[in-house]
Image 1 (spheres, rainbow, N blue to C red):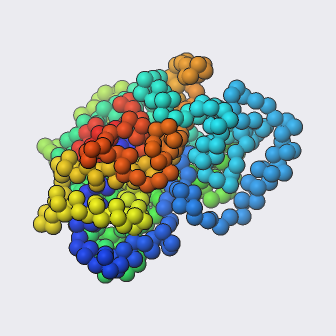
Image 2 (image 1 turned 30 degrees about the vertical axis):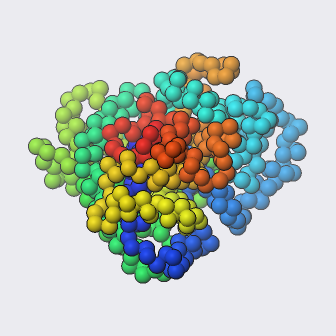
Image 3 (image 1 turned 180 degrees about the horizontal axis):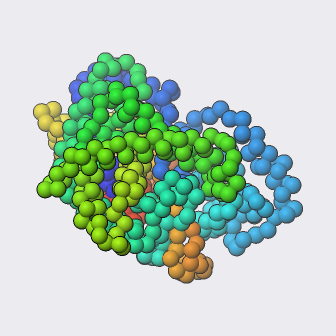
Length: 507
Protein backbone atom coordinates (compact mmCIF):
# COMPACT_ATOMS: atom_id res chain seq x y z
CA UNK A 1 0.00 0.00 0.00
CA UNK A 2 2.00 3.21 -0.26
CA UNK A 3 2.41 4.43 3.32
CA UNK A 4 3.15 0.84 4.03
CA UNK A 5 0.99 -1.99 2.80
CA UNK A 6 1.24 -3.39 6.34
CA UNK A 7 -0.62 -0.52 7.98
CA UNK A 8 -4.05 -1.85 6.88
CA UNK A 9 -3.19 -5.28 8.27
CA UNK A 10 -1.92 -3.93 11.58
CA UNK A 11 -4.89 -1.61 12.11
CA UNK A 12 -7.35 -4.26 10.92
CA UNK A 13 -6.19 -7.00 13.26
CA UNK A 14 -6.03 -4.61 16.24
CA UNK A 15 -9.38 -2.90 15.62
CA UNK A 16 -11.17 -6.14 14.74
CA UNK A 17 -9.82 -7.90 17.84
CA UNK A 18 -10.87 -4.97 20.04
CA UNK A 19 -14.35 -5.10 18.53
CA UNK A 20 -14.79 -8.85 18.90
CA UNK A 21 -13.14 -8.77 22.32
CA UNK A 22 -16.19 -6.84 23.53
CA UNK A 23 -18.76 -9.06 25.22
CA UNK A 24 -20.96 -10.39 22.42
CA UNK A 25 -22.59 -13.05 24.55
CA UNK A 26 -25.96 -12.17 23.03
CA UNK A 27 -24.83 -13.19 19.54
CA UNK A 28 -26.34 -16.63 19.92
CA UNK A 29 -29.72 -15.01 20.50
CA UNK A 30 -29.23 -12.97 17.35
CA UNK A 31 -29.14 -9.49 18.87
CA UNK A 32 -25.63 -8.50 17.87
CA UNK A 33 -25.66 -10.63 14.76
CA UNK A 34 -28.75 -8.82 13.53
CA UNK A 35 -26.89 -5.53 13.81
CA UNK A 36 -24.07 -6.87 11.68
CA UNK A 37 -26.32 -8.60 9.20
CA UNK A 38 -28.25 -5.42 8.54
CA UNK A 39 -25.21 -3.93 6.79
CA UNK A 40 -25.34 -5.98 3.58
CA UNK A 41 -28.94 -4.90 2.98
CA UNK A 42 -28.83 -1.26 4.02
CA UNK A 43 -25.29 0.04 4.43
CA UNK A 44 -23.22 -1.14 1.50
CA UNK A 45 -21.88 2.31 0.69
CA UNK A 46 -18.28 1.15 0.46
CA UNK A 47 -16.16 3.83 -1.26
CA UNK A 48 -13.68 3.44 -4.06
CA UNK A 49 -10.04 3.25 -3.20
CA UNK A 50 -6.78 4.78 -4.16
CA UNK A 51 -5.18 4.30 -7.60
CA UNK A 52 -6.38 6.48 -10.48
CA UNK A 53 -8.25 3.66 -12.22
CA UNK A 54 -9.61 1.87 -9.15
CA UNK A 55 -13.40 1.83 -9.23
CA UNK A 56 -15.99 0.84 -6.65
CA UNK A 57 -16.48 -2.52 -5.03
CA UNK A 58 -20.24 -2.49 -5.51
CA UNK A 59 -19.89 -5.15 -8.18
CA UNK A 60 -18.42 -7.58 -5.64
CA UNK A 61 -21.66 -7.32 -3.66
CA UNK A 62 -24.03 -7.59 -6.63
CA UNK A 63 -25.52 -4.25 -5.56
CA UNK A 64 -27.62 -2.44 -8.14
CA UNK A 65 -26.84 1.23 -8.69
CA UNK A 66 -29.36 3.66 -10.15
CA UNK A 67 -28.03 4.91 -13.48
CA UNK A 68 -27.14 8.62 -13.49
CA UNK A 69 -28.16 10.83 -16.47
CA UNK A 70 -24.78 10.62 -18.16
CA UNK A 71 -25.15 6.84 -18.39
CA UNK A 72 -27.11 7.53 -21.58
CA UNK A 73 -23.90 8.84 -23.12
CA UNK A 74 -22.16 5.61 -22.15
CA UNK A 75 -24.97 3.55 -23.64
CA UNK A 76 -24.68 5.44 -26.92
CA UNK A 77 -20.95 4.81 -27.09
CA UNK A 78 -21.31 1.13 -26.17
CA UNK A 79 -24.18 0.49 -28.61
CA UNK A 80 -25.01 2.79 -31.52
CA UNK A 81 -21.88 4.90 -31.22
CA UNK A 82 -19.58 1.91 -31.46
CA UNK A 83 -21.02 0.79 -34.80
CA UNK A 84 -20.52 4.28 -36.25
CA UNK A 85 -16.97 4.68 -34.97
CA UNK A 86 -15.97 1.15 -35.98
CA UNK A 87 -15.67 2.18 -39.61
CA UNK A 88 -12.79 4.45 -38.60
CA UNK A 89 -11.20 1.92 -36.23
CA UNK A 90 -7.57 0.95 -36.18
CA UNK A 91 -5.36 -1.32 -34.07
CA UNK A 92 -2.45 -0.57 -31.78
CA UNK A 93 -0.51 -3.79 -31.30
CA UNK A 94 -2.13 -6.57 -29.31
CA UNK A 95 -5.38 -5.41 -27.74
CA UNK A 96 -8.98 -4.31 -28.34
CA UNK A 97 -9.94 -2.16 -31.30
CA UNK A 98 -9.32 1.58 -31.04
CA UNK A 99 -11.63 4.38 -32.09
CA UNK A 100 -10.54 7.93 -32.93
CA UNK A 101 -10.60 10.31 -29.94
CA UNK A 102 -12.32 7.80 -27.67
CA UNK A 103 -9.60 5.13 -27.65
CA UNK A 104 -10.37 1.55 -26.64
CA UNK A 105 -14.00 0.47 -26.51
CA UNK A 106 -14.81 -0.66 -22.96
CA UNK A 107 -18.16 -1.83 -21.63
CA UNK A 108 -18.97 1.07 -19.29
CA UNK A 109 -21.80 -0.84 -17.64
CA UNK A 110 -19.35 -2.52 -15.26
CA UNK A 111 -16.28 -1.42 -13.27
CA UNK A 112 -13.10 -1.02 -15.28
CA UNK A 113 -11.23 -3.83 -13.51
CA UNK A 114 -13.98 -6.31 -14.46
CA UNK A 115 -14.14 -5.05 -18.04
CA UNK A 116 -10.38 -5.56 -18.38
CA UNK A 117 -10.66 -9.01 -16.81
CA UNK A 118 -12.94 -10.10 -19.67
CA UNK A 119 -10.25 -9.21 -22.20
CA UNK A 120 -7.82 -11.82 -20.84
CA UNK A 121 -9.56 -14.75 -22.53
CA UNK A 122 -9.18 -13.04 -25.91
CA UNK A 123 -5.83 -11.26 -25.68
CA UNK A 124 -3.94 -13.14 -22.97
CA UNK A 125 -2.17 -11.81 -19.90
CA UNK A 126 -0.65 -8.79 -21.62
CA UNK A 127 -2.44 -6.35 -23.94
CA UNK A 128 -2.72 -2.64 -24.62
CA UNK A 129 -5.67 -0.31 -24.12
CA UNK A 130 -6.09 3.39 -24.75
CA UNK A 131 -8.34 5.91 -23.00
CA UNK A 132 -8.26 9.20 -24.86
CA UNK A 133 -4.66 10.43 -24.77
CA UNK A 134 -3.54 7.75 -22.27
CA UNK A 135 -2.18 4.40 -23.46
CA UNK A 136 -1.67 1.52 -21.01
CA UNK A 137 -0.11 -1.91 -21.22
CA UNK A 138 -2.26 -4.11 -18.96
CA UNK A 139 -0.61 -7.11 -17.31
CA UNK A 140 -2.53 -9.92 -15.61
CA UNK A 141 -1.75 -13.00 -13.56
CA UNK A 142 0.73 -13.55 -10.76
CA UNK A 143 3.72 -14.58 -12.88
CA UNK A 144 3.38 -11.61 -15.24
CA UNK A 145 2.93 -9.07 -12.43
CA UNK A 146 5.85 -10.52 -10.48
CA UNK A 147 8.07 -10.40 -13.57
CA UNK A 148 7.33 -6.69 -14.01
CA UNK A 149 7.15 -5.40 -10.44
CA UNK A 150 9.71 -7.63 -8.72
CA UNK A 151 12.22 -8.91 -11.28
CA UNK A 152 12.17 -5.63 -13.21
CA UNK A 153 11.34 -3.37 -10.26
CA UNK A 154 13.89 -0.69 -11.11
CA UNK A 155 12.69 -0.46 -14.71
CA UNK A 156 9.07 0.04 -13.64
CA UNK A 157 9.86 2.33 -10.70
CA UNK A 158 8.50 5.63 -12.06
CA UNK A 159 4.99 7.01 -11.99
CA UNK A 160 3.40 8.09 -15.28
CA UNK A 161 1.98 11.55 -15.78
CA UNK A 162 -1.64 11.14 -14.67
CA UNK A 163 -3.15 14.57 -15.43
CA UNK A 164 -5.53 14.71 -12.46
CA UNK A 165 -2.84 13.75 -9.94
CA UNK A 166 -0.37 16.16 -11.52
CA UNK A 167 -2.96 18.91 -11.22
CA UNK A 168 -3.43 18.46 -7.47
CA UNK A 169 0.08 17.38 -6.42
CA UNK A 170 2.03 19.52 -8.91
CA UNK A 171 4.81 16.94 -9.08
CA UNK A 172 5.56 17.07 -5.35
CA UNK A 173 5.10 14.55 -2.55
CA UNK A 174 5.46 10.79 -2.97
CA UNK A 175 2.60 9.76 -5.26
CA UNK A 176 3.34 11.77 -8.40
CA UNK A 177 7.04 12.66 -8.09
CA UNK A 178 9.93 10.89 -9.82
CA UNK A 179 13.71 10.98 -10.00
CA UNK A 180 15.83 12.82 -7.42
CA UNK A 181 12.89 14.54 -5.72
CA UNK A 182 11.12 11.23 -5.17
CA UNK A 183 14.25 9.40 -3.95
CA UNK A 184 15.00 12.19 -1.47
CA UNK A 185 11.45 12.31 -0.12
CA UNK A 186 11.18 8.52 0.09
CA UNK A 187 14.45 8.14 2.00
CA UNK A 188 13.32 10.73 4.53
CA UNK A 189 9.85 9.20 4.91
CA UNK A 190 11.27 5.71 5.45
CA UNK A 191 13.55 6.96 8.22
CA UNK A 192 10.82 9.07 9.82
CA UNK A 193 8.20 6.33 9.84
CA UNK A 194 10.76 3.99 11.38
CA UNK A 195 11.29 6.48 14.22
CA UNK A 196 7.57 7.07 14.70
CA UNK A 197 6.76 3.35 14.56
CA UNK A 198 8.01 2.89 18.12
CA UNK A 199 4.81 4.49 19.44
CA UNK A 200 2.57 3.42 16.54
CA UNK A 201 1.12 0.39 18.27
CA UNK A 202 0.16 2.48 21.29
CA UNK A 203 -1.71 4.90 19.03
CA UNK A 204 -3.60 2.02 17.40
CA UNK A 205 -4.54 0.65 20.82
CA UNK A 206 -5.69 4.06 22.02
CA UNK A 207 -7.87 4.61 18.96
CA UNK A 208 -9.27 1.09 19.27
CA UNK A 209 -10.65 1.99 22.69
CA UNK A 210 -12.40 5.06 21.30
CA UNK A 211 -13.86 3.06 18.41
CA UNK A 212 -15.26 0.33 20.66
CA UNK A 213 -16.78 2.96 22.96
CA UNK A 214 -18.60 4.66 20.07
CA UNK A 215 -19.92 1.31 18.83
CA UNK A 216 -21.22 0.47 22.31
CA UNK A 217 -23.08 3.80 22.34
CA UNK A 218 -25.39 2.37 19.64
CA UNK A 219 -26.74 -0.09 22.26
CA UNK A 220 -27.21 -2.92 19.77
CA UNK A 221 -29.26 -0.92 17.26
CA UNK A 222 -28.50 -0.98 13.49
CA UNK A 223 -26.11 1.76 12.42
CA UNK A 224 -23.80 2.71 9.58
CA UNK A 225 -20.22 1.94 10.69
CA UNK A 226 -18.71 3.93 7.85
CA UNK A 227 -17.96 7.21 9.58
CA UNK A 228 -16.87 5.59 12.87
CA UNK A 229 -14.30 3.37 11.18
CA UNK A 230 -13.09 6.12 8.85
CA UNK A 231 -12.72 8.43 11.85
CA UNK A 232 -10.72 5.83 13.77
CA UNK A 233 -8.33 5.08 10.92
CA UNK A 234 -7.92 8.74 10.04
CA UNK A 235 -7.13 9.53 13.68
CA UNK A 236 -4.30 7.01 13.61
CA UNK A 237 -2.86 8.79 10.56
CA UNK A 238 -3.42 12.13 12.34
CA UNK A 239 -1.45 10.87 15.33
CA UNK A 240 1.48 10.01 13.08
CA UNK A 241 1.46 13.20 11.03
CA UNK A 242 -0.03 15.86 13.35
CA UNK A 243 0.69 14.41 16.78
CA UNK A 244 -2.95 14.52 17.89
CA UNK A 245 -6.37 12.99 17.27
CA UNK A 246 -9.86 14.47 16.80
CA UNK A 247 -13.19 13.79 18.43
CA UNK A 248 -15.47 11.74 16.16
CA UNK A 249 -18.14 14.41 16.47
CA UNK A 250 -15.84 17.28 15.51
CA UNK A 251 -17.70 18.95 12.62
CA UNK A 252 -14.59 20.18 10.84
CA UNK A 253 -12.91 16.80 11.15
CA UNK A 254 -15.94 15.09 9.61
CA UNK A 255 -16.08 17.70 6.85
CA UNK A 256 -12.45 16.98 5.99
CA UNK A 257 -13.10 13.22 5.94
CA UNK A 258 -16.04 13.83 3.62
CA UNK A 259 -13.83 15.93 1.33
CA UNK A 260 -11.19 13.20 1.28
CA UNK A 261 -13.71 10.43 0.57
CA UNK A 262 -15.45 12.34 -2.22
CA UNK A 263 -12.11 13.30 -3.75
CA UNK A 264 -11.10 9.64 -3.95
CA UNK A 265 -14.53 8.71 -5.31
CA UNK A 266 -14.32 11.31 -8.09
CA UNK A 267 -10.70 10.53 -8.99
CA UNK A 268 -11.71 6.92 -9.69
CA UNK A 269 -15.03 7.81 -11.33
CA UNK A 270 -16.01 8.08 -14.98
CA UNK A 271 -15.54 11.86 -14.78
CA UNK A 272 -12.11 11.54 -13.24
CA UNK A 273 -10.98 9.18 -15.98
CA UNK A 274 -12.53 11.45 -18.61
CA UNK A 275 -10.37 14.28 -17.27
CA UNK A 276 -7.27 12.06 -17.45
CA UNK A 277 -8.10 11.04 -21.03
CA UNK A 278 -8.76 14.57 -22.32
CA UNK A 279 -7.08 17.00 -19.88
CA UNK A 280 -6.59 19.85 -22.36
CA UNK A 281 -10.35 19.89 -23.01
CA UNK A 282 -11.76 18.95 -19.61
CA UNK A 283 -9.85 21.58 -17.65
CA UNK A 284 -11.98 24.22 -19.39
CA UNK A 285 -15.33 22.48 -18.93
CA UNK A 286 -17.75 22.31 -15.99
CA UNK A 287 -18.67 19.00 -14.40
CA UNK A 288 -18.71 16.94 -11.18
CA UNK A 289 -14.91 16.54 -11.34
CA UNK A 290 -14.63 20.22 -10.37
CA UNK A 291 -15.45 19.16 -6.81
CA UNK A 292 -12.05 17.46 -6.68
CA UNK A 293 -10.27 20.80 -6.81
CA UNK A 294 -12.64 22.45 -4.33
CA UNK A 295 -12.23 19.61 -1.85
CA UNK A 296 -8.47 19.62 -2.33
CA UNK A 297 -8.30 23.32 -1.52
CA UNK A 298 -10.06 22.62 1.81
CA UNK A 299 -7.65 19.79 2.62
CA UNK A 300 -4.61 21.89 1.73
CA UNK A 301 -5.87 24.84 3.79
CA UNK A 302 -6.33 22.59 6.83
CA UNK A 303 -2.86 21.03 6.56
CA UNK A 304 -1.29 24.46 6.05
CA UNK A 305 -2.88 25.60 9.31
CA UNK A 306 -1.42 22.58 11.10
CA UNK A 307 2.03 23.21 9.60
CA UNK A 308 1.92 26.86 10.72
CA UNK A 309 1.03 25.79 14.27
CA UNK A 310 3.88 23.26 14.27
CA UNK A 311 6.34 25.94 13.14
CA UNK A 312 5.30 28.15 16.04
CA UNK A 313 5.67 25.37 18.62
CA UNK A 314 8.64 23.51 17.10
CA UNK A 315 11.26 22.30 19.55
CA UNK A 316 14.49 21.68 17.64
CA UNK A 317 15.74 19.36 20.38
CA UNK A 318 12.98 16.80 19.80
CA UNK A 319 10.39 15.82 17.20
CA UNK A 320 7.14 14.03 17.91
CA UNK A 321 5.41 13.57 14.56
CA UNK A 322 5.97 13.58 10.81
CA UNK A 323 5.54 17.35 10.39
CA UNK A 324 8.03 18.04 13.22
CA UNK A 325 10.63 15.82 11.56
CA UNK A 326 10.05 17.45 8.19
CA UNK A 327 10.34 21.01 9.51
CA UNK A 328 13.66 20.12 11.10
CA UNK A 329 14.80 18.70 7.75
CA UNK A 330 13.83 21.94 6.00
CA UNK A 331 15.96 23.88 8.47
CA UNK A 332 18.84 21.42 8.08
CA UNK A 333 18.99 21.76 4.28
CA UNK A 334 17.91 25.38 3.89
CA UNK A 335 21.24 26.31 2.25
CA UNK A 336 21.35 23.27 -0.07
CA UNK A 337 20.25 24.30 -3.57
CA UNK A 338 19.71 20.63 -4.53
CA UNK A 339 17.34 20.00 -1.64
CA UNK A 340 13.62 19.56 -2.21
CA UNK A 341 12.78 19.92 1.47
CA UNK A 342 10.38 22.84 1.49
CA UNK A 343 6.84 23.50 2.68
CA UNK A 344 5.25 22.67 -0.68
CA UNK A 345 6.71 19.18 -0.52
CA UNK A 346 5.76 18.88 3.15
CA UNK A 347 2.16 19.80 2.29
CA UNK A 348 1.92 17.25 -0.54
CA UNK A 349 3.72 14.49 1.37
CA UNK A 350 1.38 14.91 4.35
CA UNK A 351 -1.66 14.71 2.07
CA UNK A 352 -0.07 11.65 0.43
CA UNK A 353 -0.08 9.85 3.76
CA UNK A 354 -3.77 10.62 4.24
CA UNK A 355 -4.72 9.76 0.69
CA UNK A 356 -2.95 6.40 0.76
CA UNK A 357 -3.47 5.47 4.39
CA UNK A 358 -7.04 6.26 5.34
CA UNK A 359 -9.46 4.88 2.76
CA UNK A 360 -7.68 1.60 2.01
CA UNK A 361 -7.38 0.66 5.67
CA UNK A 362 -10.93 1.71 6.54
CA UNK A 363 -12.34 -0.21 3.58
CA UNK A 364 -10.43 -3.35 4.61
CA UNK A 365 -11.88 -3.13 8.13
CA UNK A 366 -15.44 -2.69 6.82
CA UNK A 367 -15.00 -5.72 4.59
CA UNK A 368 -13.78 -7.69 7.63
CA UNK A 369 -16.89 -6.77 9.61
CA UNK A 370 -19.14 -7.53 6.64
CA UNK A 371 -17.67 -11.01 6.15
CA UNK A 372 -17.95 -11.71 9.87
CA UNK A 373 -21.67 -10.89 9.56
CA UNK A 374 -22.08 -13.05 6.46
CA UNK A 375 -20.25 -16.06 7.95
CA UNK A 376 -21.11 -16.28 11.69
CA UNK A 377 -19.42 -19.69 12.01
CA UNK A 378 -16.13 -18.08 10.95
CA UNK A 379 -16.78 -15.16 13.31
CA UNK A 380 -17.22 -17.66 16.14
CA UNK A 381 -13.85 -19.30 15.43
CA UNK A 382 -12.13 -15.91 15.35
CA UNK A 383 -13.84 -14.99 18.64
CA UNK A 384 -12.66 -18.22 20.27
CA UNK A 385 -9.06 -17.63 19.17
CA UNK A 386 -9.15 -14.04 20.44
CA UNK A 387 -10.56 -15.17 23.80
CA UNK A 388 -7.95 -17.93 24.06
CA UNK A 389 -4.87 -15.86 23.14
CA UNK A 390 -5.80 -12.36 24.34
CA UNK A 391 -8.67 -12.83 26.76
CA UNK A 392 -10.81 -9.99 28.08
CA UNK A 393 -8.38 -8.32 30.49
CA UNK A 394 -5.98 -6.61 28.07
CA UNK A 395 -5.70 -5.10 24.61
CA UNK A 396 -4.27 -7.03 21.66
CA UNK A 397 -0.70 -6.38 20.54
CA UNK A 398 1.01 -7.25 17.29
CA UNK A 399 3.06 -9.83 19.17
CA UNK A 400 -0.17 -11.82 19.56
CA UNK A 401 -0.55 -12.43 15.83
CA UNK A 402 2.07 -15.18 15.83
CA UNK A 403 -0.25 -17.19 18.07
CA UNK A 404 -3.39 -16.40 16.06
CA UNK A 405 -3.06 -18.26 12.74
CA UNK A 406 -6.81 -18.54 12.11
CA UNK A 407 -7.50 -14.83 12.66
CA UNK A 408 -4.52 -13.99 10.44
CA UNK A 409 -5.85 -16.33 7.74
CA UNK A 410 -9.30 -14.74 7.96
CA UNK A 411 -7.88 -11.23 7.56
CA UNK A 412 -5.81 -12.33 4.56
CA UNK A 413 -8.91 -13.84 2.99
CA UNK A 414 -10.80 -10.59 3.68
CA UNK A 415 -8.19 -8.68 1.69
CA UNK A 416 -8.26 -11.26 -1.12
CA UNK A 417 -12.04 -11.45 -1.48
CA UNK A 418 -12.61 -7.78 -0.66
CA UNK A 419 -10.32 -6.91 -3.56
CA UNK A 420 -9.64 -3.55 -1.93
CA UNK A 421 -7.31 -2.37 -4.71
CA UNK A 422 -8.47 -4.11 -7.93
CA UNK A 423 -5.98 -2.24 -10.11
CA UNK A 424 -2.48 -1.37 -8.97
CA UNK A 425 -1.16 2.18 -9.14
CA UNK A 426 0.08 2.76 -12.73
CA UNK A 427 3.83 2.62 -13.29
CA UNK A 428 6.08 3.78 -16.11
CA UNK A 429 9.10 2.08 -17.68
CA UNK A 430 12.38 3.98 -17.30
CA UNK A 431 14.02 2.14 -20.22
CA UNK A 432 13.23 -0.29 -23.04
CA UNK A 433 12.48 -3.80 -21.83
CA UNK A 434 10.66 -7.03 -22.72
CA UNK A 435 7.64 -8.67 -21.08
CA UNK A 436 6.44 -12.10 -22.22
CA UNK A 437 8.28 -11.61 -25.49
CA UNK A 438 6.71 -8.20 -26.16
CA UNK A 439 8.86 -5.13 -26.57
CA UNK A 440 7.99 -2.44 -24.02
CA UNK A 441 9.51 0.94 -24.97
CA UNK A 442 10.80 3.47 -22.46
CA UNK A 443 7.99 5.66 -21.11
CA UNK A 444 5.29 2.97 -21.41
CA UNK A 445 2.59 3.12 -18.72
CA UNK A 446 1.90 -0.20 -17.02
CA UNK A 447 -1.42 -1.11 -15.39
CA UNK A 448 -1.49 -4.21 -13.17
CA UNK A 449 -4.71 -6.16 -12.64
CA UNK A 450 -4.55 -7.37 -9.05
CA UNK A 451 -8.07 -8.76 -9.50
CA UNK A 452 -6.70 -11.27 -12.01
CA UNK A 453 -4.38 -12.55 -9.27
CA UNK A 454 -6.80 -12.53 -6.35
CA UNK A 455 -9.34 -14.66 -8.27
CA UNK A 456 -7.00 -16.79 -10.37
CA UNK A 457 -8.40 -20.33 -10.62
CA UNK A 458 -4.86 -21.65 -11.16
CA UNK A 459 -3.72 -20.26 -7.81
CA UNK A 460 -6.66 -20.44 -5.39
CA UNK A 461 -8.54 -23.64 -4.63
CA UNK A 462 -11.93 -21.90 -4.36
CA UNK A 463 -11.31 -18.41 -5.78
CA UNK A 464 -14.94 -17.22 -5.67
CA UNK A 465 -15.64 -18.42 -2.13
CA UNK A 466 -14.67 -16.83 1.19
CA UNK A 467 -12.37 -19.55 2.48
CA UNK A 468 -9.73 -18.87 5.19
CA UNK A 469 -8.28 -22.33 4.47
CA UNK A 470 -6.50 -20.69 1.52
CA UNK A 471 -4.04 -19.39 4.12
CA UNK A 472 -3.86 -22.36 6.49
CA UNK A 473 -1.75 -25.51 6.42
CA UNK A 474 -1.74 -28.00 9.29
CA UNK A 475 -3.27 -25.37 11.54
CA UNK A 476 -0.56 -22.79 10.84
CA UNK A 477 -0.66 -19.64 8.75
CA UNK A 478 0.35 -20.39 5.17
CA UNK A 479 2.16 -17.73 3.19
CA UNK A 480 0.94 -17.45 -0.41
CA UNK A 481 3.27 -15.78 -2.89
CA UNK A 482 0.31 -14.79 -5.05
CA UNK A 483 -1.29 -12.88 -2.18
CA UNK A 484 -0.79 -9.32 -3.47
CA UNK A 485 -3.75 -7.29 -2.16
CA UNK A 486 -2.07 -3.91 -2.70
CA UNK A 487 0.76 -4.63 -5.13
CA UNK A 488 3.88 -6.75 -5.31
CA UNK A 489 5.43 -4.64 -2.50
CA UNK A 490 8.16 -3.36 -4.77
CA UNK A 491 11.01 -2.06 -2.58
CA UNK A 492 11.50 0.86 -4.95
CA UNK A 493 8.05 2.26 -4.25
CA UNK A 494 6.36 0.82 -1.16
CA UNK A 495 7.02 2.23 2.29
CA UNK A 496 6.08 -0.91 4.18
CA UNK A 497 9.41 -1.58 5.80
CA UNK A 498 9.37 0.75 8.79
CA UNK A 499 5.87 -0.07 9.97
CA UNK A 500 5.73 -3.02 12.36
CA UNK A 501 3.14 -5.74 12.35
CA UNK A 502 0.95 -7.19 9.67
CA UNK A 503 -0.39 -10.57 8.74
CA UNK A 504 2.35 -13.20 9.13
CA UNK A 505 4.20 -13.80 5.93
CA UNK A 506 2.33 -11.13 4.02
CA UNK A 507 4.37 -9.12 1.51
